[in-house]
Amino acid sequence: MESESKSGRGIFSSLPRGGNGHRRDSAAVLLEWAEEQRRAMVERQLRRRGIRDERVLEAMGQVPRHEFVPAELLREAYEDHPLPIGGGQTISQPYIVAQMVEALALQGGERVLEVGTGSGYQAAVLARLAARVHTIECDPSLARTARERLSRLGFGDTVEVIEGDGSAGYATAAPYDGILVAAAAPDVPAQLIEQLAEGGRLVIPVGERDSQELRLIRKIGGAPVVSKLGYCRFVPLLGAQGWEKI
Ligand code: SAM
Image (cartoon, rainbow, N blue to C red):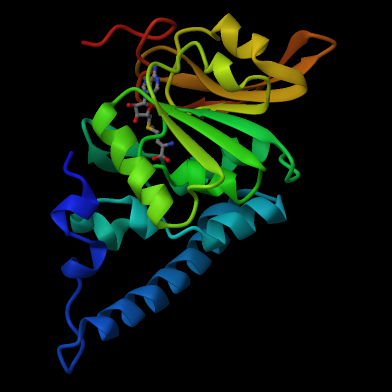
């Protein structure tokens, strides 16, 4: 995938120019449109479907999701479905992002690991809710683009983007209060439980390549306590503890 900053193709270039031809007008129109879209997304897709954590609702009402999608899909940025982000990968549907993040029950001081940076959107949401976010992505081009984007949007101090296989977590910065896996695993990798702090929470889709169950695993007294959050469909977690690339 091409780097946004190098190509100079920002999201603004896909918008119509204002009446007097100035790009600044387009930027103002975009910001107003995006704010209204976020308000509607939070009310209709999140609050109405049962997302209750006000901090999560606020974070998703603030993070500019339209900055995380390809320019040609800008108008669909806040719609109720995942979108392609290149390399055969997707930015998850807003509701599933909210559901996973809410399950981590973040209060603000936590250290969090995300496996599967993708566009960087979910990492940005996590950055508004926790003290430190480490996010790992195996696709070098996606990792680079997400790192540049998160830095440009002011998340660079809170979020570290690592390029590599995160299927066995990222031991270097462990332990974590929360681990969120944004790709589907065949089983729960034991290393992820090991890297959880006592009382920590892991949210992970587990199951077949094309359909999974979303699980919340809490580490209590050193042992995993599992609850089920529902069914879901994620792209496969690749790598040592994931699926083979086909
Ligand atoms: N959270 C992302 C966002 O907000 O855009 C969406 C994640 S996307 C559904 C899943 C991502 O997991 C893909 O970008 C894919 O390349 C990545 N992935 C798959 N296996 C991985 C692994 N073993 N380590 C790190 N990333 C992996």
